[in-house]
Image (cartoon, rainbow, N blue to C red):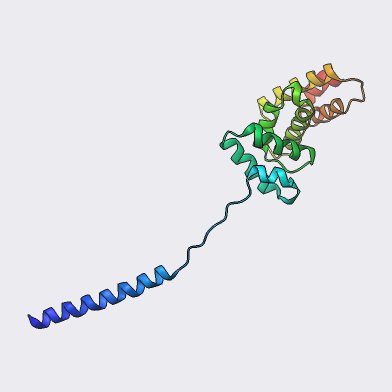
Length: 173
C-alpha cells in the first residue's frame, strides 16, 4: 500500500508541476488587441478616397444594420455614386428606393442608371420588378425631359434598348 501511495503522490506531484508549467505558458502570452476600424464618421471626415470599394461596402452594410441611414449610409452612397465607385447591387436597389424623392433627384437618376446597368451587364437577373422599374423610370424621364437631348432620357433609352426591346418600341419608336 505504501508503494501505491508513493506512486499516487509522485503522479500528483508530476501532474501539479505539469499544470504549473502549462499555465505559465498560457499566462505568459500577451493578449493581442485587435483594433477596430475607422467609424463611418471618421471615414466621411477624412474622405473616402483612402478606402477600398470593399471597405465602403462594409460601411454601407453596417450603417443599414445599425439603422444609421441618414447620418452614414446616405452620405457614403452619395459619394460612391458621384465618384462612380463600385457599389453592391443590394445597395443600389436600396438607393433607388431611398433617392426616389425630389430632394435627391440627381442621385435617384444615378442610382437607377447604375442599378439597371448592372442588370444589363449580367451582374443581376432582369426580373419582373426590374421591368416595372424600367417602365416607370422611362415614363418619369420622358415626362420630365427638358429636351430630346436630355442626359437622363438618353440613358433611359440605352437601358431600355438593352434590357427590354418591347418597352423600347413602346416608349422610343
